[in-house]
Image 1 (spheres, helix red, strand yellow):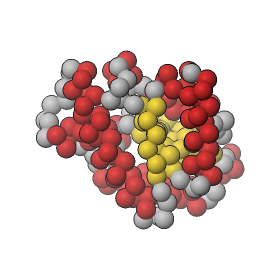
Image 2: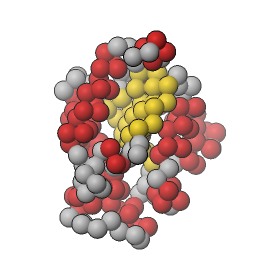
Image 3: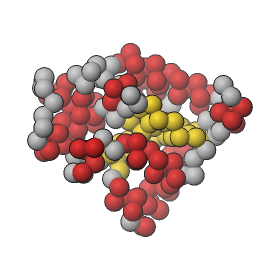
Amino acid sequence: MSRDLKTAQRWVIKIGSSLLTNNGQGLDLAAIEAWVTQILVLRRNGAEIVLVSSGAVAAGMERLGWQTRPTALHQLQAAASVGQAALIQVYEDFLRRGSVHGSQVLLTHEDLRDRQRYLNARATLRILLEMGVVPIINENDAIASAEIRFGDNDTLAAMVANLLEIERLITLTE
């Protein structure tokens, strides 16, 4: 690990759907476990981690028994809503093995554009990090419309990095 990476204390790590799912057909538990294991190593080395995670739609499709990804916006939103619970539970289960808690934070671009909501999000995320919790952030796909169509978690991760004055932004995607 380079010297810069070793000294960075606060990181945003964004993991895309292709690295968390079985080709969009449900969550890849072994892959998620491997990512969480690496996050726990970083934490043991002094890093505070904020995770921006995709994968909710794929998890929801699996739970709902859907074989084909829907194209209708409201069906995608429903799948994301169902899948978000599954996704967070998987992360929490693996984080708990390292005696760490995760938390769910759902945001939209509007949350980071409105000054009061921006300040509230920043304060909450800072407190979570101070408490040793790994915030797990995702786009609030159940109510957002444009974001779900474009898979905008890369931009969300950058906005969160700016919000928290993060030293390192790592984007893991294909």
